[in-house]
Amino acid sequence: MGLIDFLYPPKCIGCSEVLSVAEKKARAKGADALCPNCRAEFERDKLKICNRCGREMIDCVCSKSRLHGVGCSELLKLTKYGDDPEQVVKKLIFCQKRNNDRRCERFLSNQISFLVKRLISDDASDFCITHIPREKRNIVLYGYDHAERLAKSVSEICGVQYVPLLDRKKKGKEQKYLDGEQRAKNVRNVFSISRSAEQYKDKNIIIIDDVVTTGTSMAECIRQLRCEGFEKIKGICIAVT
Ligand SMILES: [Zn+2]
Ligand SMILES: [Zn+2]
Image 1 (cartoon, rainbow, N blue to C red):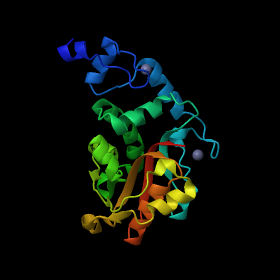
Image 2 (image 1 turned 90 degrees about the vertical axis):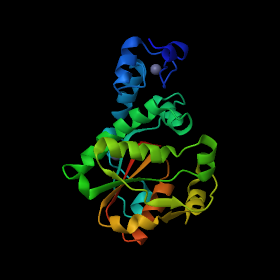
Image 3 (image 1 turned 120 degrees about the vertical axis):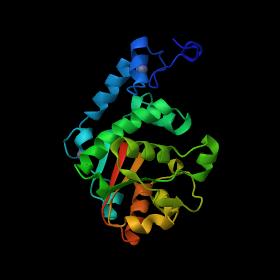
């Protein structure tokens, strides 16, 4: 055991239990950030049944009405939020947003990569990955854009080009305090298309987000991309509510 591990024993992101030596070895190989119990819960959650299509969440592509409104009929996801505030996926997403925790990021990006690989089939060169830029105030507060980190990491794992297609140009209110209608108004024209985007118009664009609630931010990004002539856009997220 190294000194760092001795002083700061690695803990499960789901339940804060100190990880055993075996789990630490697995983690060293980039495998895990969760104890066996939390890992099992996470895997079970992926198999929850979607009450719209009857498929397991991991196979469900049900979209949100706002996303349908901008022509995005498929949203891939790993799981859905339940009622439990202690749900492992919530802990992971919270941690990835705030704690600058690389093993959490690695775990989540590996998970998202399964979905991306399913989309790209054999020709990755036709695809680009992008992200929804984080609010500027939160970049200042936490020191990084968690969505950008996730998208870049997924891009490396899948061998799909990462391109920052979107910019956040003005300050909106924080989305989580607003209802559906307010959210839509709040994000209207918040995003713009970056200058270098033009050359990627013919590509299949994969937008990655952590949680899709009403789909307002993602829908607005897709709307902007469509206005600029992008046609093939798909959304992927970790969890839907
Ligand atoms: Zn745990
Ligand atoms: Zn479904």
